[in-house]
Image (cartoon, rainbow, N blue to C red; front, top):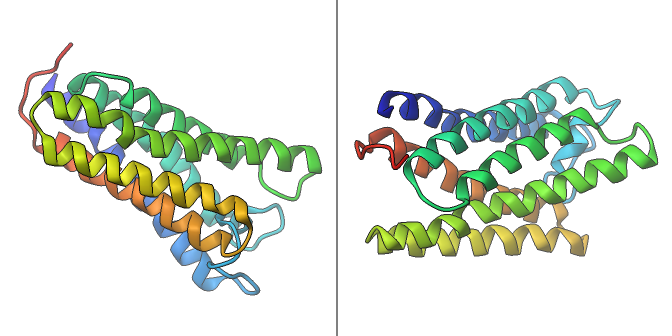
Length: 194
């Protein structure tokens, strides 16, 4: 089972790296686009020239992170794994419903994005207690801090100003936690808890 866990843990690296690469490259090449003010989803809007690139980034994240969630489930008690699976599935919803198709689609797109934000911030928050219970107090404290920063930044996107900045800051904090914990899963030799 440890080999299976290591294989699925790779999704926690590939998903976030593919997602961040897509919005970084897309944001750099898109005209009339501000990474500080515009949402990442604008890069995948119906008529955006970067739509294929950004949609690919969403899909890589949406597939990779649920796989990582399965690895997390094998190793760590508690519901953090379910939050990881949910954030990946919500991201697939974002990819399937690009902005500017209709007002209704934009509304549902926003709902999927909101669920993705909450569940991404939830992964480290929900992992903190099981980590503490294992005696990993520094990892638990880092998880709480990361979840709080990610949640606060993603909540700040509702204020409107610098929406893109706060979105990227919150998502990056969550993504760094996913990648870091995925590397931990890749190195960890503890038998599956199941």
